[in-house]
Amino acid sequence: MTTTFPDVTISTDRLVLRPFEEDDVTALAEMMNDEHVTAWTTAPHPYTHADAHSWATAHSHDERTEGRGLVLAVTEFLTQRLVGIVHLRNTDWRTRTTEAGYVTAPWARGEGYASESVLAVAQWLFGDQHFERLELRTAADNTASQQVAQKIGCISEGVLRNAWIVRVQAADGSWTETRTDVIVWSLLPEDLDDTDEYGAPLGYEAWEGHSGRSAHHGGHAFAQRADAPGRPVGADRN
Image 1: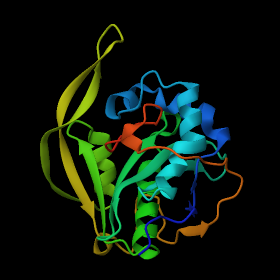
Image 2: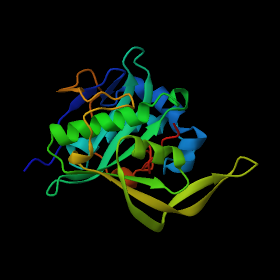
Image 3: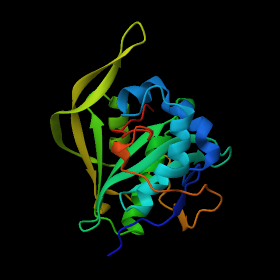
């Protein structure tokens, strides 16, 4: 039984989803220090250049090689700038199920990149990897993230009460933590329509063996690393 995802790059009309590289470090640090990312993820705050370097060159790659999931940097096809992250985690290779988290950079919001990138990954998962279920979890107050789930055709399955912790920023700029409900969404192969009105073409391209990325090293699970971006709970602010 296959227990790791391939080293893959996925392309749509507007985006290229690929493994992280060392050249992404500066943009990654800037993206992860955005207030909306701080609010909806477990990312360290402040998110340092060292945090970004460790994630881009080592720990994001460990997610794949150690069988936990897959981390893809979302970049614009024309400019090659980093505009987000899609992270597959909690992968169960026996049942062929996994969970997607996603982050959109503040300079790229309002373009529909989150729905386009997550949908492209879902199409690849179902078509090439023969997965049977993709799960998304969104904080109850994160309406932008919920819109992404709805746009790609996810079905809301219910609410996990008091199941997550988010951050709230006070007037003085300080952050406090508070508990929140989590909405569980699922996407199955039969949920994907033949047409897509949200900017992600069904005719995506995927190829294995991305070249030019930094070498990766041993590491630990995403949620256990203080220097990882942090688990996104549908952290898009589109």
